[in-house]
Every structure is written in structure tokens, then in C-alpha cells.
Length: 353
Ligand code: PMP
Image (cartoon, rainbow, N blue to C red; front, side, top):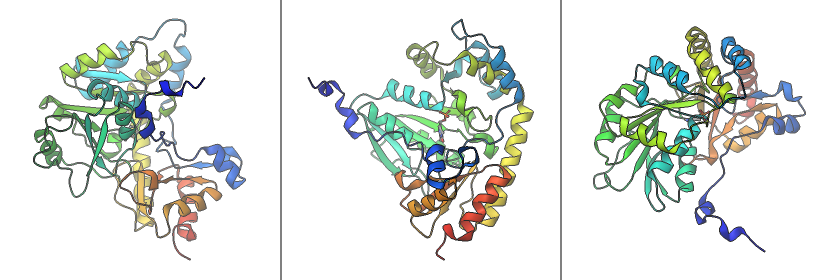
């Protein structure tokens, strides 16, 4: 019996989440031992979390269901928003997926300003809804006559993969020209040192998402949050699982938010490395994240493959709508990892010999 007819038709249009090169594949392709593979493809933080986070994980019990109240309180004091406006999820990806489920029915439309993080599109499609691409450059804009044709609009600042910041005026213009809800993804806000999160106070249609995966170095524990107006936060809590984030992740999150010095030190080191790398590669776009976006002379797939053979994983942006096939994204790593990348890239892999 073929049971596949039970699958939702929406799955036909879905491309799987692309996590980039697996370090094990890099090790195999390069012949370099796994522990020496340089992972600059996932915008992770090489310095890791506060040591206090790891201690807190060891102390957190496992027999009781998790309680997120302390984490929500810690986010409330970190962001300055009341606890009622804080929603949490197992990674920002979970919040993005849940928001899509709150708003999108089959055949609904959602705007995505491209190039940007491709996960929005995946989640829109999983709801059976339709992603509508609009250009991010020179500024995201909703054309006249389109204000009511979408339920959600996605923006990202600093934008993954390009590293650009969204200006306050540009965000206000989008918020005021749509009848939909705007999701602003600030996964990398700490590296930019600026945020538009306060606009949630003024706009009933803005949700701002953040994560502890980047500046706080907790990617493996899956912890994200968003600041949302009351009416959206209430609906989110009605629909998301009460125990969806593990006790270990919550404990690590609370401890990390209690050691902001660690996060600030790690951000300062990465920002200084980012600028050093940018200085060495004239074609790199200015970036406010923990990564650089580079236009390559050769096709990006060839460049990424060349680096792979040297044991260095970067993100080939060819699968990201709007990037074309001549861009790679390189995560800022430890100084010695960045040197290895610069040596390989400037030594010929990124350029015609
Ligand atoms: N938004 C953006 C822009 C990202 O780059 C990422 C991580 N790649 C996420 C969200 C997901 O973050 P998390 O690890 O919290 O799920």
C-alpha cells in the first residue's frame, strides 16, 4: 500500500532547510581530521558561551518538566520590555515557524525581502502559503495597492547574508504601508550595537525576534525569544508547547544573561576580527553581523568547493534567492581560523589565478 497520498500537497513546493556543509563531509573531502576542520559556514560563535552557562546546565535537574519563567524574566530585564511581551522558543527558528502557523492559511501570501534568511520561505511554504519576493535593495518597500495582500512580511537586520542594517525610517515605512504583521529578525543585533526593538512600543503589527545562538554562543542549546505586542504574545502562548524548551537550555540562558560581560567581550573580539578581515578583502561588503558577504570572481560553488578541499567550510549563497551565483558568506571565527581562510582565499581560491 502506498501511504504517500496522505502527505500534505504543500510539501511538494518545499526545499529542505539548507544547513550548509556538514563538518564531517568537509573532513572527508579534504582528508583533514574532523577536529581540524574550520567551520565558517554557520555564523556560530567560536568563543562559546559564558562558563556560568555550562555550570548552570550541570546543576539543572532533568526529572521535572521545564519552567521558563526565570528565562522570561531575564529577557525582560535584558530588553526592558514587560514579561507579558516576551515569547520564547527552542531557537529563533521555532518562533519563526510558530508565527507562520499563527497567521498563514493555505494560499495566503507573505512578503519576503530578498536576499535574506531562507528559513522564512520554508516555513511560509510549509503552511501552504505563498512567499512573495520583493527586493531588499535599495530599500524594502511595499508598492501601493499591495498593502492588504499579505498577512506577514519578513525583514532581517543585520541581514543574513548581506550584513546590512535596516534603517529606522525604512522599517517605519514598511510598518505603515502594510495591513500585515511585520517580523523583524534581529538574530545578530548584538554585533551591530543597535536595534529597532523599541518600535514594538509604537506598532501593534511588529514582532522582533532574537536568539542566544550568536552573541551568546549557545547555538547547540536552541534558545530564542521575541518581543511582541500583547495580542500576538497572548496568541503565541495559546498555541506553543508549554514545555518546548529544555531545562538545560533555559538554565544556560538565564546564566548567560547574568554574565553580559562575557557576551560583550566575545562580541568585541568578533567585531574587531570582522573589520580586520574586511580590510584584507576589498570586495567584502560592510557588515554589521558576525559574518562577511563576498562577491566572488569565480562561481561561488567553485570557490566554496575549493575552500572545502582545504578543510574550510563557508556558505555558498547560490541557493539563497536573490544572491545569484557569485556570493559566499564567511563567518568570523577565531583569529587563526580567519587567517587560514584569508590565506586560502587571497592565495587564489577566490580569484582567477
Ligand atoms: N534568523 C537568522 C537571520 C539566522 O541567521 C538564524 C541562524 N542561522 C536564525 C534566525 C535561527 O537562529 P536559532 O539558532 O535561534 O534558531
